Length: 281
Image (cartoon, rainbow, N blue to C red; front, side, top):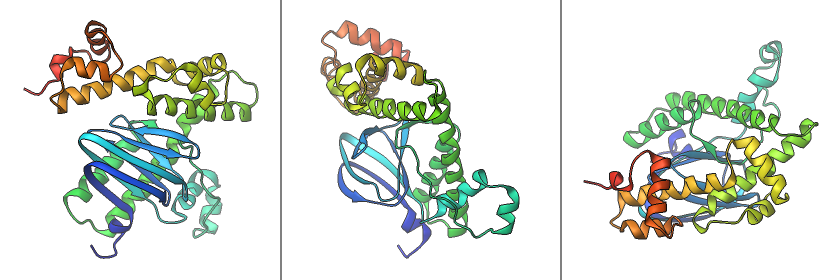
């Protein structure tokens, strides 16, 4: 492919196994049909069908995909200073935007945490994915879509601030730090869900006591760490039921259940149907 914005900014892949270790520009990552595991100095992240992840410019990371079925990946990288230029729209007074339209603005740092699919970022990311998989797109069209996607990513940071505001601390800076820590713990719970990590292990990853971690986790995310891990394991079980020929008992064990009855009840509560309904006909 020639040197186009698409070739520099969009990676759309599909495969069962992949390994990468290094640094890349600011980018957003999403996966469908399976999951990818990321590791950075800031923590571990499981990125699957239900969420996406932003990693900041120059962040060193390890990426691993090891899946029984092909995983579809969409990764969008942004040229240098684009995020800072878009952020000016929300940070500066309108008259400053008119007086100096070419200014770069202050650097932008995104909270590195998985974010559930939502109505602002996810549709734009999927529209870019569809267009770039099906054809070579014009730079002008893609530039507009990338700017809109960046704006949505910046606005999504409001959700982090809203969750942080729920935490029981007087100072805003304390709430922000507490939220950063419970977010790191949440991503640890999701990334290690299949091994059923203890509350103490998740709290240690967040640098909090177990009770302090559990209390603030529930306040921020509306569910317990155990409930988060269970949802990840049952989502994994649903993918195995849909895409592999493994037996239900094998899948139940992979999801951390010793009893088929307990697995079936938990699966029905989570997905609204029995495990047999997810089998391919």
